[in-house]
Image: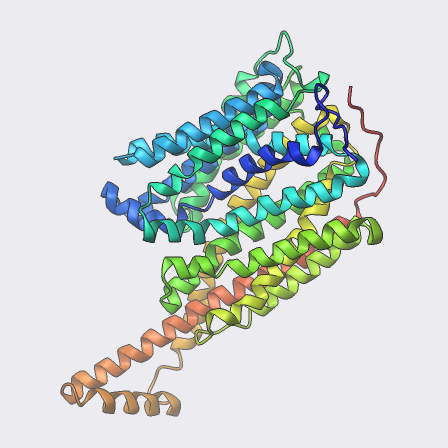
Length: 519
């Protein structure tokens, strides 16, 4: 039996058909958050820049999308939600082509910023549309598919980017968006229609002050998070000044949003308990997801010599876990309840983090498959029901604004999580190196035996003094490798702790929902 959707008021489209172009655009946007990661060394070579400078290729995308996300509700009222959705897809697709054609770093940054500007509107609008077009009893299954796309796309990004880069060349990681963008644009035009409250509105005004302070806050915050660890955080004067500017801009932004009669972002949705606690939980989950997705391939490349493609492939079991979780979530949510699934997912995620906390440098790729699978399984089991439950007590008129606020805060959570994980690895590695280096002395029998064995091996190639030096260097190298490994191990354990700590937030969320208004 065909289901008539609330927003498809001109044609009787099945909501699962309407979902196709929405998920296609959401998948493209989420994929481009990570697909560039493994190609950065190649792009750095093409543009004659350092690796540190190449990270701005990622940062410019995240900052631009983060600035646009809270303004989605305004642009939806200004143009009409469907029209703005189509504009966003068009800008994202054309900017992808510009990125592929880039011959210099400034050109690439412009292309990535435009990608972010176009992509910023995709996720909140997609989430709001999916929440509306499905009846309440089918909404959890629909959000499971949505959550699967949101989580799987960033996981697939490194593997797909590595394969494309090694077999073709890095511009094609952007060119592949062109055909899919054109298909999505045409399907959106045909299948999606605005309900009355999402149509173009007259006399819409722009909160320019709020938009300015939002841009300053996110830009300076991203600079602090990206460069803080390299600059020794608040030990550097310029980091302190930049952070102070960021906090002043943040306070100004919040103050303006509270006092302005027509603010850029309606923060009143945060008064809803389900939305507030649900969004806090999602911020932590996004931080864990994006940070773990970044550091695991890095660990495999730096400590075990994996290629960019193989390190990307390491994320495939996580995708399998996400797929299984989407099936479990869609099947069991109505039977056991969403809160039960969320708590179970967080526990599974914590177990996966603890299993990662037991790895060593001698493991094979298969040895990280199980904890990676658990990470994907737990992430989707917790995130998908939470996406649904956090917005369940909001009216349909609030959904677009709420999605913008939620996605902004999730972006901030992802940025903070990624930055903290980098700092934790660095600091924990230093602590363990300090602890281990004490054992490298001639009073330690294990050290002297190891040194004699290595020196004896190297004496066949050189003189005894050089052989002893080579032996000492080899032992020191292994010590640094072990201390670095411990940095990753400790960080994964903190991921597990974070998953367990937020369980009380889930208990504060109520199951009661309000009647959704669609007119």
